[in-house]
Length: 229
Image (cartoon, rainbow, N blue to C red; front, side, top):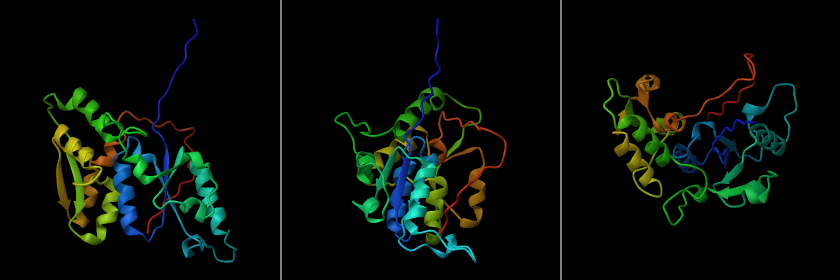
């Protein structure tokens, strides 16, 4: 008898957004925090002129379109998500039109209230409740939606820990996350934010990792890209 192993992974989304558009970045962080596997998704920073951070002394910088193309090819997303319609074409990103989504598509629901695309945190919370949180735990995790007491660090907190809004299209996700897991919103001083990384804390982006495992091809140090304004 032949057998097979099937592995299921979340859909991989790349969000195309202008780095200086803080309102759009916050929206991206909120939507991404509601998606199963959100911690593995990617931001494509849109620019027409190559920023100085990408330039090397004595070397000619590649064209902006070439950098954006390289980012998309390196990440290989299942879908490219636009904040503004037509951004991909406008910035010269070649991507199949049938796999380009508007960010509103990720919060759309069908007639039964389910996500039309992907799996969101409501399903994750349902599984966490059935398998763990409905039982009395000796050392239960501290379930949080952390935010910064200082406005200037707001985006950093949202990018690092996730953010679920109290109102709007994602309010139902936040409501289920807090009620099913007995969580709370917590404002944290910026200097204390490293404490949130303690394993006892469960925040939205960490919850998006539920039941996911990563496998290394080797123990060599591979390439990594961090984008932080």
